[in-house]
Each structure stands twice: as C-alpha cells, then as structure tokens.
Image (cartoon, rainbow, N blue to C red; front, side):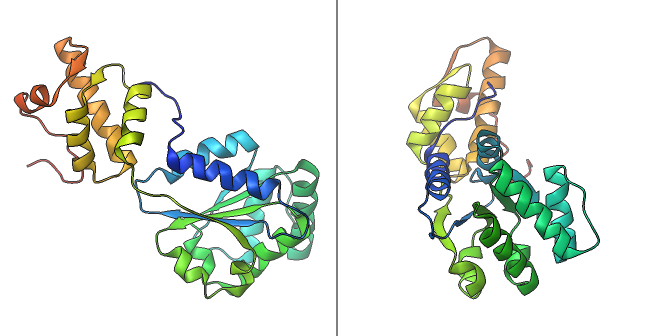
Length: 237
C-alpha cells in the first residue's frame, strides 16, 4: 500500500470549510466544528490538513482545566507558560495573531459541557481573530446547541460521512499496488459498513494475499476461493 492522502469527499469538505474560515470577512465568526463516527477518517484528514495550513493541534482531556488547556496550547506553539491564566492567554493571542495559526482542538466532547473551557476558547477566538476548529464524535453537534458561547460563533459545520463506492474506488486506485475489481470492492465496502479506516485495512489484506500469490489483480471469486476474511469489525473465530 502506498502512503498518500487521497482527497475524498470528507477531506474536500474540510478543506472548503477551512478556506472559508481563513478568508472570511471581518466581523464574521471564525469557529468550525468537525464531527463524525469513529473510522470515518477524521484523524487522517485533520492530521494532513493541519500540515497544509501550519495549524496548532491539541487533544482535549477529561481532566483539563483552563490552565491545563492553555499550557498545552503554549507547548504546541513552543512558547513558555506562566502560572497566571491571563498571561498565558495573552501569549497565545500574540503568537496566533503574529504567526497566523489556526487552532484545532480534538476530542472536543470534553470541552462542550465545561463552561470555563468554552469561555476560554471563545476568548482565544475573539482576541486572535484566527479560526478555531473543534473535532468531536457524532452527537457533539447537538450538545453544542446548549453552549451559546460557542454555537453563536460557529460558521462552518462539517460532518464526516460514510465512505461511498466512488471514494472507495479512488482510494483503491491511488493506494493499492494491485488491481481490485469492482465486484470485490463492493463486497469490501459492505463488510466495512462505510468505514474508511476499515476499507483501507481490507485493501491491505487484499494486497497482501495477492502479493503472496504473485498476482496483479484480485476478483471477488479469487477472494472467496481463498477462504479468508477481512477480519473487519469482529475477531476471527
């Protein structure tokens, strides 16, 4: 399998939302929310996109306090932190504004229901003028409705959706070093239940078995005749 990022529909939506946030008119809110089920490719997409825009990535934790969150952001910025929250916010605001950095906060489900954390993020957004993008699990968009401090500043909402057949074909053609027929790809797509992560795992399994047998194309009949499985979702018996 080749190591490349394939611009599937979910990544294209993230890119469009990020561009809109970074080029928005003065006075427009600059926060965004990215959410979706596990396995839909959020982590891969965000990791790739952060590198494209020189973003700041932090992962929220259940134990976070405002001070802990600010210290983590400053560490990612390579700036010293203080014991005083006010000083840390000023340092973050200065660094983000000077460097034009976008802040990405993963596992944002831990933040939404914590008023102090949401207010601190709102302050960073308001004072820097730079985009702040939250990343969470499916359902976070509903929780956000109860947080007026953040929901009123959201101008981009990006839901990561199931991988469709067109995306699956694009990924297979780009990453796989053996050919996968349409029938086998449809079979894999059904087993993966639309999970991009599991699609890639399955493609890796197909490629491995093809290489072991010295063939350059795998059909559905080939795969079924090998009496093997993708080991997707369930442990093998």
